Length: 220
Image (cartoon, rainbow, N blue to C red; front, side):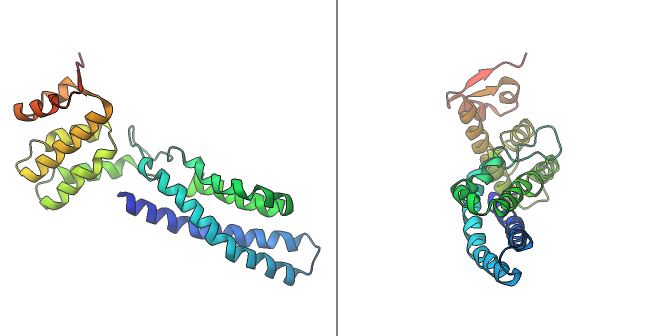
């Protein structure tokens, strides 16, 4: 799943979540009595027409901050997005409104929490496994495999690194170069490389990796 696609799915899922929350909040106040239901409901919906876009924009900004760590598929199964709780931060500037509309505020806050826990999309180990199989499949177009080799570098997980090591010896030079570039970026970021992985590379590639100045660690 690319970053752009993840952001798009996140936004598509969040908009109805926020809209339903505002509709529920608009019904809470009138149901408690006070002003005539029709007038109070119309007022609340007008507030919602302003609030939903603003809250969506603020939440989308937070999602952009989270997009780089949307999943870390290590052991299999879906994992929550690290730091996903930050989606509730847009509610902090609205705290003064909680004094005037406490129940409505709680409805919106509950919707944000529900989005974090149950709705916010996260990756699955199977997604990554399918992509890595495509990386090793000669039947997949070279351009596609090059894109995959570059895209998976941000995951930095063991299965990804192992797949990139294999791809670095691919018959297609473009794929091999992209895989080596991704491996270099991962190992420079970590500052260390396993000697068992380094030995699987060609002598030329090993020299390239050693020139990066990363520490070589023996797995034995």
